[in-house]
Length: 170
Image (cartoon, rainbow, N blue to C red):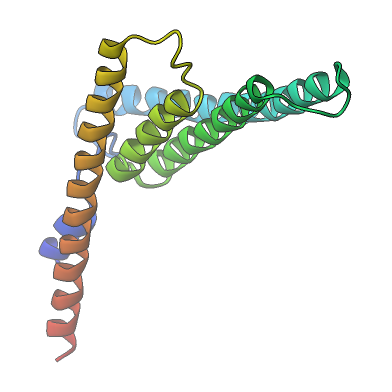
């Protein structure tokens, strides 16, 4: 792989396995082991969260009126499900980081968007002030623009890679 193609496929390397300084190399090994441990913990959190969703749903369906959910119950269940999905996204971030040494920026921003979407879904407008809503709107706008820009850059980078490969084939 040429250096130019490598530059396009590898955005930046966070914890390279080889480093000229032995101390830095050992520290990278320790940090990568810590990230692996975090991946195991995230898997446990996901399992625990799924069990919590089942428990919350069971409790809500068991209370009077039986087998019916009111809107507050639905918000609780939706909030719990969104937390599981956010946990899964964080696990995917960790897994991608372990597999490639590259921080998946687009996925991190998408995870943040999902977290703020969860906040919006379970937001109680009766207890929320206008400044808080404006803050959430600003965060959504900033994250949306960031996601769009990163996705656009990824598309351009992919197009450049494709044109490089096509030029190489001809």
